[in-house]
Length: 216
Image (cartoon, rainbow, N blue to C red; front, side, top):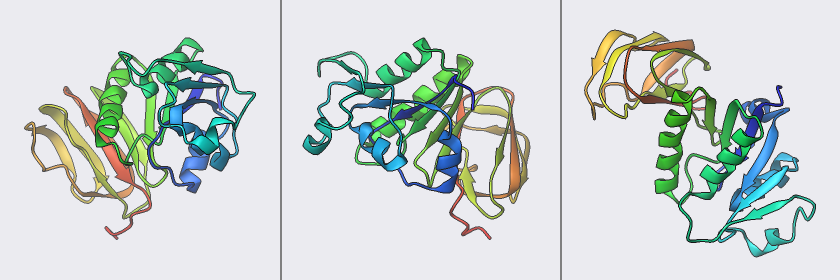
């Protein structure tokens, strides 16, 4: 994998699935506060550990003594995750994997990760959010493809009205569809294999559950 790929270890839930291991294999790592707990599980040593360390467990505080720390005050204008992403970009990141970005106890952080991912995609970055069991990819103007197992579930919530939305190789395909803001029309679709998404204008996220084959 290119050295311009960075995995940001965040504080949400993370399951050590094969798709997760393949996604992060060969990448560089930066930990955000309590997200460092995922490093041991993954068997990796991040090159930087940032945050205010208010969510770092006591038993983790003395771990990884050779990893440089970049502390910030609790009263700051950005989340630890956003700081970690900024550090990755400063080090040459072009692809960002936000591991532990979905689920967990803080739904506000999970929502912010989704919104930030769309902004990063609009700035030209390749972004994947993952919990191991669930994955998310920004969908903005253009076309993307996701290689999903046949029968797995996915949804496409929009962060505003969507124009020219097309979904191919799915149980419920769409062609040049206008999705009003707040509509549930694109929730709970089923992949028939690699799914192709196209969008003329708008901002959305593709949320996929590759291990949930309840659609079979």
